[in-house]
Length: 229
Image (cartoon, rainbow, N blue to C red):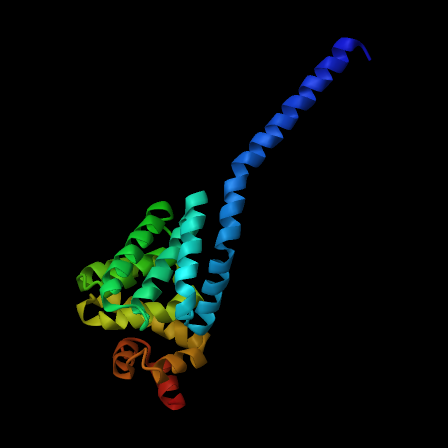
């Protein structure tokens, strides 16, 4: 091979190497963030099964989510951080003076999520939950809750939390919004009646409000529920 050809081949190889190094440098913060967030992902996945994260783990998980966001600002990390702050605010071990700031941080994180991913039903539910806990108007809460329903009606992990929240604000709903809540309640029952009954036994759902919501067009589900009770 002529000298010129070998030289051109080496230059091409060097360019490819530099491109590979540049690509690796760009992806490295994302990989770091993903590894930092892994315990948060695991804990949140478990939370949707058990409905709890131990109080002692919350500060550690918040720090991991913050660190992940410091490497790569992705909406999924804001989503995890928002849920953790909300759980901190609800936790009995959290001092009363720390709860409002935790709720405000949860709301801010939720708003970050929906600004980056407007069709994310998890983010909209986080916004609605934080707004409700902060005492904002029912109309404001219902708007965010409705967005969560519209962007992900069939999300098994979200159904009961949405119903629990919606039933606390049902008196402020329009007929159409109350019908949406009734549809979600009927769907949650059909998909997992056992979990629905557990929510009733734990008083996360008010039986009288459930009856009221289901009586509007879901008499068959109400009859099945009464039979199980």
